[in-house]
Length: 139
Image 1 (cartoon, rainbow, N blue to C red):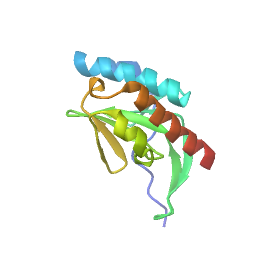
Image 2 (image 1 turned 180 degrees about the vertical axis):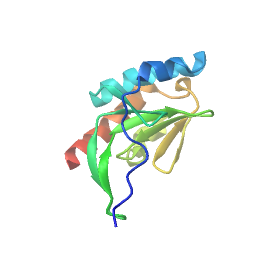
Image 3 (image 1 turned 90 degrees about the horizontal axis):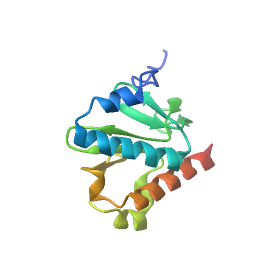
Image 4 (image 1 turned 120 degrees about the horizontal axis):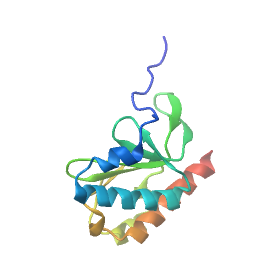
């Protein structure tokens, strides 16, 4: 039996067009996040599915399911309530930095931030750098 293909795939959709359609408040934070993630990952943004902006790529293999595929190293999605950051190497593995980050929540491997003004963006960038470095070292 063939394994199901992941629903979320990289697309040719425009990141700028996607972010440009957001409300003014959310759009400014998202364009700032693009700059932070580009510096931290040294990768250009790509749309993954219809609402995730991903940076970099790596091949993963799930220990639980055995599923493998291609995914982004770090990314984000502007949700209604929060900016959701996907840090594939786990931001929670940086407890000292997480304490310095500012107002945030962590759950299910995601970092939730209401707005960038709530966090120290230099600390956020360092967390992303470390997560990306960890993933690259596993490759």
